[in-house]
Length: 166
Image 1 (cartoon, rainbow, N blue to C red):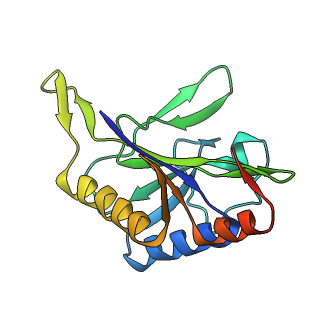
Image 2: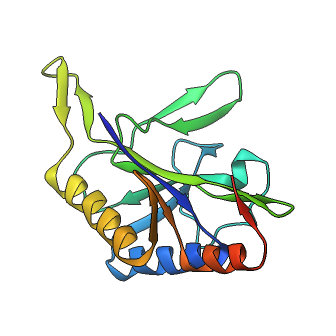
Image 3: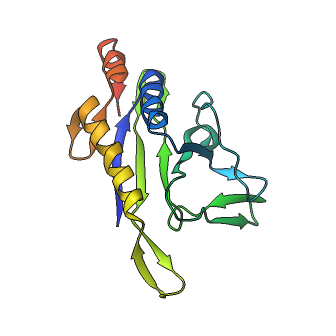
């Protein structure tokens, strides 16, 4: 079963979040699609827009002993990461249209299909612990809005200045 958090993040909130992830080492940001099966990590995120390529990324803990599984999408002519099989967290960024912010999310599957066992098995404990540490950091540094929804401090400033959360 996947674990998920909904997040309202300003660009400043994103920068703080990514700095936290980098401070622990073994972390890379991967694009959603690639022209080759070897995904090249990104140093920075582009400005967010309505385009999925600027909003959806994969966060990978490279110290987790599970390979990155990619698949070729014939329709798009690009390689995609199989998030279910790989030790990655999907990072969908918040997006602002006019004065309305749409939430982003962090989502990760905690199981994968093991071909040898022909069954679902848990991803390595290091992966689960990494996601739990991310969740703990969010809960500590963001305001809790609803059951699984959190608001970053930069987003609170956006609200004080008249912005609306959708």
